[in-house]
Image (cartoon, rainbow, N blue to C red; front, top):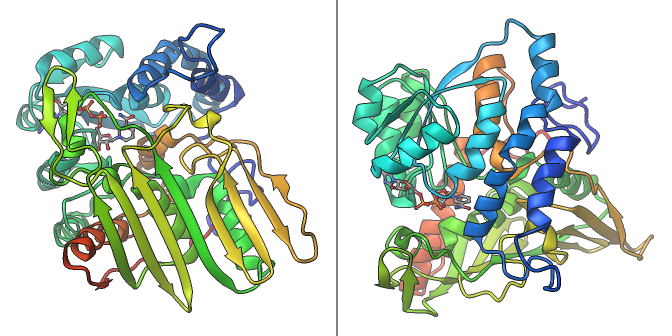
Length: 431
Ligand SMILES: NC(=O)c1ccc[n+]([C@@H]2O[C@H](COP(=O)([O-])OP(=O)(O)OC[C@H]3O[C@@H](n4cnc5c(N)ncnc54)[C@H](O)[C@@H]3O)[C@@H](O)[C@H]2O)c1
């Protein structure tokens, strides 16, 4: 058992885990896009298609055994009255999970594009929908806000929700700067509220396996790590390419969360950022100018001689699109004086861990089961925490540290200097 009283095997981490039929449905959408069967699997799926395909399987969640067994086993379960703001692409990923989560009662959805809020309220039978955060706060009472709006809008919405006494789960980033994020966290603590931010890569069994391998000493002295994530970039919203957007907070954020979780907080950052594609075409908007980086190389100093490197970008050839199961490379690689460990697939959709040591130099693959983990479940885990007190491994302190790395990378690239960091978080994580 671990320090949270959870089984320490790599197959089951949380009580809110999704059982095989549900995970099977998700994996099916991950691997069976709507393409001609003569085409290579996933060759043409985009993030948008992926979201649509996922939505189509929402019905599969109706039979999720964890829902009925949990309800039967725990009739007194406290359901958290929840509102979701931002009814765009990623809401199609969150809402099916939230709808079936035994710890959540969905009471309202909101979007500044009111037709989107109405559509999602109908699709997921959410009783109330609103055209703004203010209307939502003034409407049907709720206690937990899930913020799925544009990256640049999170800070103001999260602040407003905390001021109104709501717990908050925010898509990344929690705020636009470390200082603003720390203010939000202080506000939450003062008001006895909780604040969390995506992503939750540290919740996966593959992360736990790698963290234990690093801590075991089997790899010798840890020296270096490399991680990467990229694709051709979203085409449905311009905020990804505008100030405060970029591949760092959208993509590198996953690797930065994993690497700081595995190797510890970062002391200083050096980075080079660039714009490879200065003009893009966005749905319903046409041509836009790209004003935030779409190509990033970031060097991290974790202290004690441990260095790592993260690369991300919106110009990466990627034959799998948003199909996580298609990626078979080691997207995170950690090297020590006596061994190596690599993550198979992306950290948001890991497929296993391969490792080798001096004593056993052949790569061995282990920890190939999802163990109930899916990247879409962060807000549901937060609701479980609010309902039962069961804590997440993902903390706002780590999310804010990753945010500081991102802003430091921008400052480093602009100035040509190495930037020292101020923030930290409790490490190692109790995996
Ligand atoms: N799309 C994905 O697959 C995906 C995956 C993981 C994380 N994310 C993250 O989720 C967030 C949203 O991304 P998306 O792809 O869903 O974008 P999107 O543009 O599809 O959706 C954002 C929605 O937020 C609404 N919105 C913006 N400002 C608002 C405000 N002030 N009040 C109310 N509504 C507001 C917009 O009208 C839009 O409908 C981003 O932080 C992104 O990084 C997206």
